[in-house]
Image (cartoon, rainbow, N blue to C red):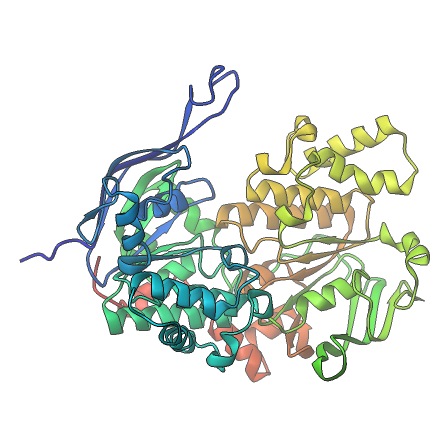
Length: 554
């Protein structure tokens, strides 16, 4: 007999109030925006389903509906959702609480915002265990927390269970979220972009952990991701979504190997390949002027016995018009180095020169003359933009600080910049929350371009973007570099993206540079064992065609 599906979704639709406006009428719920439209699929016990698509395709919205997380939000949910035989739509609040964590658990995309910053990680996991095991003592719950933290690869788990989230690295926080989800041995794990901000080696470890859990416990997995390489290596079936609807659904080998739908083919075409070489802009000079030179840079955090060295003895040069890619695991010192290069962090030691002049020791007042020429694009555009100010005002800030243009000229310049990065100039008065992730990243690029810099440090500028938006941002940076002659320092954990944009590659580990050279040489003939390990951990779309699946077919 065919076993009962672990998950059965039939005709699921999720709509949100459009809010007041000409298209919605005067009442906030007069108009509805459909985020998920008539979605149906099933998942057998122990199987794994990947849900992929661009930002706004409805992936996460569908995943949240599996655990009834839209209840109380104003969302209009119709259709049938059954998990382990439980009707999620008909369940009361008490039944939903029993379902969440006990039968089905969720790993959210952003672990820092999903964990309570004021409480120890172990206490938060223990709370979940006690909620579903009423007779468990505090000691038993804490022991279970340490056990699952150890299971997901947290070193010295008993001690680290007493630490708070900010004392964990990004990869460790994601592992802690998975540990919390596993505390009650759920039959279903829903993982929403669980590896988005992780470097390739930690990503590989997390995906390996999920495979082990499926094999050991027969746990079902629904993996929401924009990374098709991750999906190729982790699931049995793939569901491709666009505008809230399923456009293709089938075995992962078939969908990735011979997609039927044009949209699926577009997604595949946008995936960066690690074998794809950088196309240098015409007329680019490999021996251009040295813009920035760092010599034996060092940065320490903390005091006394608590001192941690984030960057140690690092030397680097950046020439006009070139792109230097910096890769390495979380905690390797990439971001710390990038912030020191533009003097957002003061070096503890070493020298920093811009066009031959030492700027490493300059005070803020003396440094202002260089601020316009050294800019940065941050990883998270949400936290780097003021939510209470329009994007036009945020972009205008560096222009006003320079004091060289009148107000009308500043507004005109901002509108030109918006158009230059592919946004509507009329969006000047809109706020950050009104834009998608890719659009907000374009706003961050426009702000960095405002003072006409010579060098921009890009810190993980595409890590949270879907493959098509990612390709658009990478293409935009290439066009800007070609047209404006800007030098880029491109920090990222996605080695395929870094290869597409980099002339030279720097590999960091433990705060030091372990390998450096022309990008093609490093990618094709890596000398250091660590570089070889990084490249070996990169997920590829080719794996489904050459290896057996990791679990039963969905």
